[in-house]
Length: 592
Image (cartoon, rainbow, N blue to C red; front, side, top):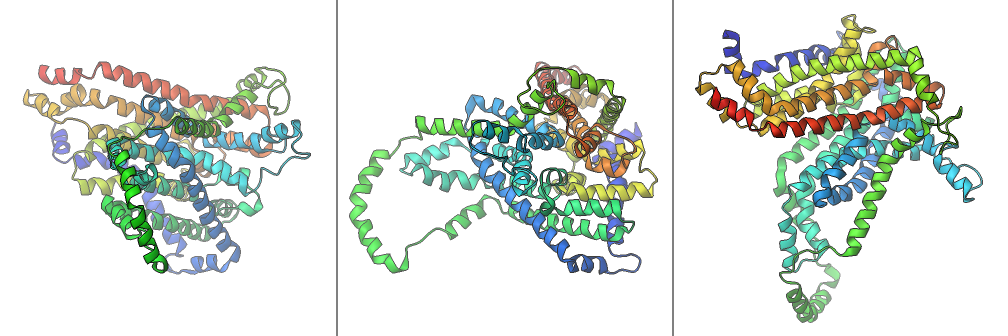
């Protein structure tokens, strides 16, 4: 009881388990990695100088920045109108959000594999163009920069859309109507009202996409050519082929420095708020052309009567969408969702192919490749390992993450921000850098190639997902219910079990499912820590994808594609059952 009272008076103590695992597995190794890059104890910048003296390394660094920037720009160009159409979709918004979530929750490895089927010389697009006679030979759609952009944008587009939708939904639609009612044209109202208010979502989406793109490894390697190498591929090559860790550490910190610069810029911009957006817009407001100032002024005077009559006619008319606007918007959304969902559906269809090679559409339907998966001990062993690790990581992350979120919700805002950002570093830093640091730390502990090492490597990222989801759930929690229970002499433990836990149960279950999926799908950290000594399902898929492409991988990919659907169904029923018991915690507080 004394320990519980101490925790109640100092809720920050609840973050110790999560922060302790993070610091031991990731924090200390990052420090050691940095010292290694400096050739400690003889501090030197020789490794950094050596990196920039290698012209090929500098070109790869610039190429990484360029590919990430262009992929982010493409995601923004496609994602902004998509997010806007979803935000104004009304009752259809939940369904459209599910369509965005499905590809986001699907394994990135499966989606990359799907594009090898679609873009290959014998893939869906080339076969279709050859069959209709538009081309005489297959187009070079794969193993080039085009394929890299297609794969990266497909994977990152949901991450761009979701933050923008969350911001756009909170924008009061009456502001646009007010601007239109005062005579503003639709484009003017959008640029002057809606766009500045949506800038926070745009900024968050761009930062998330860009930083994650910096650490891309599998997609450029699987879809790109030799001229599309990114820095993460170089780091992985150095780690697996060289015994000298110092150059690898220097390359990892150069990549990390690039990400930190972008994140620091985001921090400054985020602190500026909406006022800066308005002041910036006013600052760059186009003025009169100096050479035609007088002529423009005279023309404006002649046009004043006409503009006045037109303005009076449009005055107090609310915003109305024309039928053509709705048709164009629906067509655009259809194209985007086909782009997001079609590769997964193609993998599922190909998995039922009866032939010995990949073929779309299949000439005959069969379950032979599913039987092949479940009769192959190597696949069963990999699947069982992934399931075991996912369950253990989910349990550990849920307990530690829920405790941390509960403690953070009762801390001051400044301390909460610092600790939260520390806990989220494994999922905000480039994954290749995290993998190298975790490998170094676990190697020092002798845990490389062990199940415990894999579980710890997965946990540091999974805890972050649990903390974010549970913390968001606790943000709407009414603490007066706890105070009511305690006023009726209920102890801290009983209050938590009877009042707090039922109200945040849906968030805890959601965090647990996210943690399971994060562990089940993890491949970069697993490849470093396990050294392929302990196979998991993603590692087995990656290995087979490099050696051969047959419908066996399609069968496994289809199972992983259906996994998010099961997750969403489970989450839906969890939230649905939570609605029915929403009033019980309040009644429990009164009964106590």
